[in-house]
Length: 288
Image 1 (cartoon, rainbow, N blue to C red):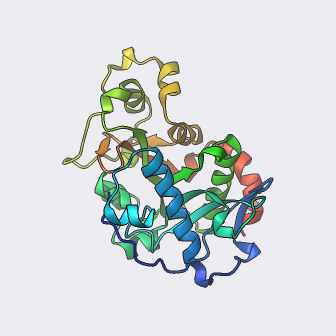
Image 2: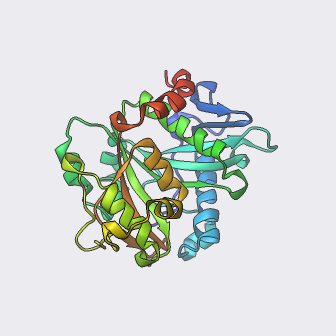
Image 3: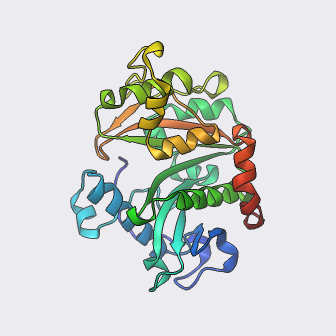
């Protein structure tokens, strides 16, 4: 976990504490809409949701400031874009209707932050250096409140991410995805499946940092049951796989968040055409 800071977050898009413009919406399904946070209050609300999910529900380690503020925050929050899912059917102020969030770090803002968040765990710079003409987007801190963990919410998040990628000319999506717990052997079959059948190769190959590297091929290839391995994958990783993602070599244990992390590598050009049609058709009108 990166160094914690709970300093006030700068407003996004030069918008104050009032309502966001209609043009900020990146997708809509029923009463749910997805857009970027427009002000510091909305960013703080997304940090509060992250605290609820990561710390209170999943058992990440808390520190004094986090407990006091009840926010999950780090130095990247001030430069990232924060994708929000908002239930417009709920009462209250906009920041009280946020039910899910995803943190987005495009290349320009990664430079301002001194690098990408996942560089602490994976040799991401070597991957970036091999593709100097590609624009990388780092995805992270994905969480949704329990009552909204449905296919519809996930679809809306991806609709928003796709529109954001179109707006920002993104070529490659990357970032850490997690298994619960700090014992990789507890996920031996699922990790071995990713290692044997889903590893990024060639110029897309990327490895966990030597100091944190833990092998993922915990079972021989022939011992992996594909059906049970897929069933054991966390929903977020399954979603990346469906889109066509590959994964880095080696996993990393994050003791602060009590997770075992793998690195996602998803070139936009590799996304399955049926998913481009599925997410892109609706997102296209929000991408202009």
